[in-house]
Length: 388
Image 1: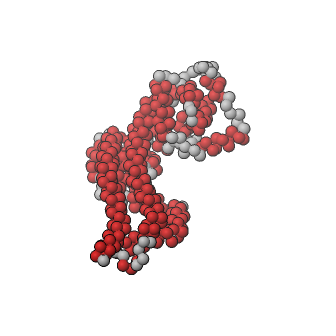
Image 2 (image 1 turned 90 degrees about the vertical axis):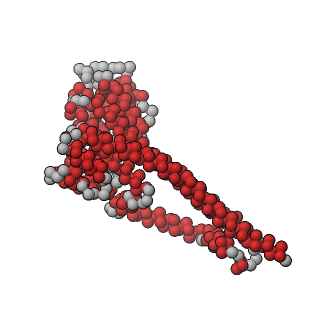
Image 3 (image 1 turned 30 degrees about the horizontal axis):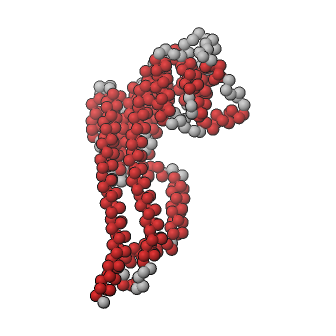
């Protein structure tokens, strides 16, 4: 382990391009610096920056560069002031003979518990450089899946917002002027009366609609402070048609990839399940994984505990059953993660193809209804004039 802390005879004896001297003179330990460190500890580093950091650090340590020296070089080149301050703190802690995992524990908002445990386990074997590149790949794949789902939802959400805005403008400004040309409102067709009612609601009760939205927003904010809100919300998300399938596969992919990384790092199965439960960001699965860790602690096998559970598909349980007995669980779980990565990609691709025609048809129906409600009384009026 000490090989990766320092490879020089004396920590202060080397000076590569004045990297150490330039970096160590930045802060004075004043109250302002301590307050700045506290504020930085509450902020998070972007995933992309962490991936680059892990890969560069892996390359440097693999080339037998001392960990402290590598951190100082990366800190000098870093452009993000937040991450730059974090790396400076890393260098100071490493000079005090702390490990990289202990430095990362100072910034829980930037480095997850799973990342810290994986690095901590490999530090004990003196093989830190071998895990950094794999860790960056795992983080990148998990983040890529999350981003794909968010990007897939952005398009329909944008269309929905635009449609609501356009309809609101039409109901409050355009439709009332068009309907004013008709004197006898009682003789209007049913579709026109419905459109007129909707227009009156938008025009006369817009203030109450804003109040309703504000009350709903406050109610949701208060609900989020209750201890059970996350479990209820995640449980609902697992039951919404179509979206439950994507959500479930995403969680299973995260579980498989994080659990595989921890297991291959010689972290105990019980501890791996406990850490993974927090990392999957789904309260329903979190409670189930914590229960699973308790079962493992009393010598119940994983597949026996998961057998018949609807949260985990039979294929995953069968693979765990076969490979758990061969002591190659980590490799099998990683293959399952790759499988669900592909499944999520395919599901999102299909969803995007289905959403576009669905949105087009919905817009067409809205436009058709408004046009029918406006044109039908005009056509009736023209027929009356012709007959007269």
